[in-house]
Amino acid sequence: MTRPPSAVPTVHDSRTLMVEDLSRLLAHLPFGAAAPGAMRPLVLDENVLEKSTFRTRVASLGYLRRLYPLSGSLMHCAPFRELWQSTEARGALALLLALDRDRLLARSAPFVLSLPVGQAVTWPDLARFLRAQGECFSDKTLGSSARNLLSSWSQAGWLSRQVPKRRTRPPVTPEAAALALLLGYRGGARGLALLQTPQARVLDSSPDTLDELAFAAARRGWLTYRRVADVLEVTFPGWEGATEEAP
Figure 1 (cartoon, rainbow, N blue to C red):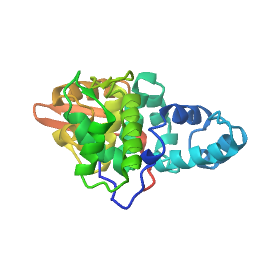
Figure 2: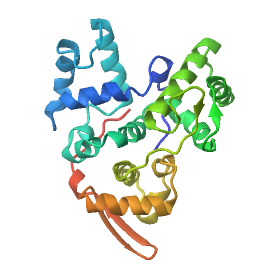
Figure 3: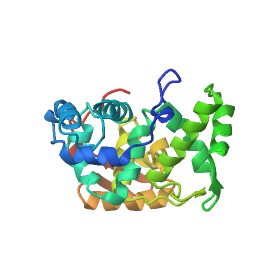
Figure 4: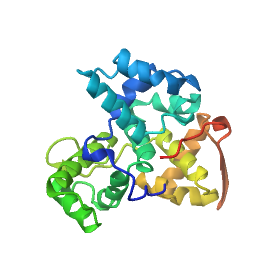
């Protein structure tokens, strides 16, 4: 996971992770190369996102495109769609994809991951953290962004949904582990280093747990897994040609 540059705008000054909207869109998009061209009529003409106005449809599609690699082939290939079938994993899958593309979401990650499980958190806590990291928004915008970020982490499963929000143990699944390993692999990690990448650390699990989840993912056909002592080999033969667009 690479942190988006500071010049890249954030969706979180206006929206959240939009997991429900993403789920509705993917439910109607076909696999493969036809998917990017199908997005606009689905959202604007057929209103699959169920928005009340045309302007909201246009804005929502724009935000989704900024958050997720919808114009690449990664999200439209069969292996990813198989991962997405797990409703329990969708929040984590969306988070992993969006962290590389949304600057403010990435900047909030150390704050959320540092919280002990069960600890309450409020938006002023996060706003102060972001201000200390050099964010130059107005107080009003920073407060709104902090609220949106907490909502995103709740949608992903790292915070509870009730108020006050509390740090929770996220539902890390073989699906989430498979995507985290794939993203780390594409970033150049190999062997045991795959269990220590930024993507893997976001899953808030020990290397041993991730290793077990990787083995489970291999049994489901999402990757190949071979380990002898401290030598780990993981490959992704089903994902060839599944590319991401740049943020």
